[in-house]
Length: 402
Image (cartoon, rainbow, N blue to C red):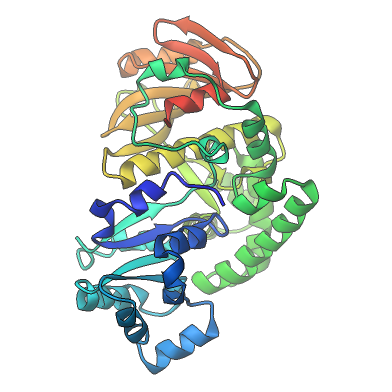
């Protein structure tokens, strides 16, 4: 079992005084974290809506959990897993909180559909904290304690001893999903990919969306790894799949809601002739991407997203992830913004290439702000300019976590 950075939020009194909603992809460790929050003595207060017994008890009595919870003592902790799979789940959770908020503590896990709470008006305002659990980060793999939020502009953190290169290589090869990291064999990964894809397409896509053409969903899933690293053209996908623009948009949104993919959108403020529409697409599980350069970029994107989610979920700041591209095809892979202000440019580099002209081009327009080229290669630590660096990934991640 790995300790997760998110644990400091899950056990933070500022967070736990309200209902906790934990979103994230399948098999990323949500249930494990929820059971850790419960503690060993309260395992009987874990209710999974995939369990027919739980669904049957709920149909008989919507407050079926109350008697068990009250026998556990004051402020009992209760976990609802996969409750989003039942009709009117948002209304049900609102009712639970309003009825039992003085007696119980609630922890709800599920897919990214929990994000829909943020789009449901003010009905749940002030009742919950939404947290996002990402695949493992290198610090978690090395069992290092994540203490708190640190600014990504504190470049002195780059001077700290780098992480193990083996941690980077293991994650790149076997994903950040705990079960796959523990097994660390290609056979296990291949079997898991097949089962994971079948469950996402044949169960989640069918049950949680209105998409009926599952064969087309599978074809889309197989096509998307080739689109990593480039602006995503819906029209190009429409031509590849021989379907409508709306069909492409619907299935991309479905995969995003199911935490299969995430989108990084272009940043356009202060950028001359910027592109302002087409996002870039990345997988939560970067091992779906066969090309090594694209896989490393996807891996880096996931690490940056995990950091942004952690900072934002913890309430320290609004941290967002973008990319930059203008009509002259100047492009930088990633831009971090802090409270909507650009603070750091990040570029995924193959090898130890020191060409940073594009970074300097955008850095001047935005500040100037620091820029860092990150390479998979071990032992790289070079200063390219006053605010520009080329560093190995195992050193760069010290800038995000400490």
